[in-house]
Amino acid sequence: MQKYLTLADGTQWIGTAFGDRSVEGAGNLVFNTGMLGYQETITDPSYLNQLIAFTYPLIGNYGIDPTVNQAATIGTQAVIVHELADFSDHYSSRETLDSFLFTHHVPGIQGIDTRELTIHLRHTGTQLAIISNQPVTNFQLKAASLPTKQLTPQPVPVQTTQGSRPHIVILDFGEKTAITQELVARGCQVSVVPATSSFNLIQAYHPDGILLSNGPGDPEAQAAVLPLIRQLAAHYPLAGICLGHQLIALAYGAKTYQLTFGHHGLNHPVQMLATGNVIMTAQNHDFAVDPASVAKTPLQVTAVELNDGSVEGLTLPGQTVMSVQFHPEAHPGPTEAGQFFDHFIHTLTQEVVANA
Image (tube, rainbow, N blue to C red; front, side):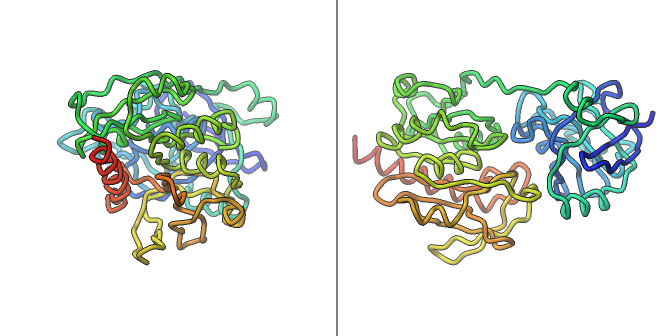
């Protein structure tokens, strides 16, 4: 069965359908340069209503392991690959990528030149695209007719050692489960609450610290939460990851902007300014903090991306507020950035001891 990928600028690719062959979808088209971790990528809530094109030519060869999903549902609108593996071979595999996408009603298209597609996006920037079962004759009408998906975060009961310290409350803007797993593995008690939660509700958890999670979309669309972020920072140590990092920047007066084609991959070099050390990081974002605007705020830049100089870390002198643009939990990606969790937890532990 043929499937059609049509971009807003009129370019089109024709391939073969996989996944849920009856479903069509529309959203911003982005490319991911990771050579592995396709399952974690597809289930990352930050890809809500986006079409993901994988640059690595063969996808699906080690199948699907249900224990590594980053969310219970898939928010991405479609998956685009050059070649889908005919069979999967791994001891932890329980099904193929094809059947996994079918179960979750996500369409896929294979057999197109993803290198050509990626080069096109690098030149034109991220743009709206449609995956359809028939050629698209009226792009805007077709895009408007296709449904979008929604995130509906709910309070999550996390299995941790009750009474353990520190206790961290995560504000869920679209959290990857690996964030919770990394904190629990370091001995923390974790509670996950919707990002719309009130200060009083969060306070009732008696947290030692707050973490703002990753999530999809334009951070400026979350303006309503900025007063809450400042209020939380005045009472608790505060950390942010990806979207959470951008929201901390906005809360203190900095600006954000949309990148031409985003950072979606596992090999982004980031320099930590305090030490000069360079770490390899996993990243997944379409917006970034404007470095010129940070200079007009009390915030300080702590890390930069060496490919394009974008802001990768912030801190607020005089308060325990810190953030990173990259994904310290990885899944997929290099794990050396996990030192961010270690630093935040060490800070919280010191405060817990001081307040004991």
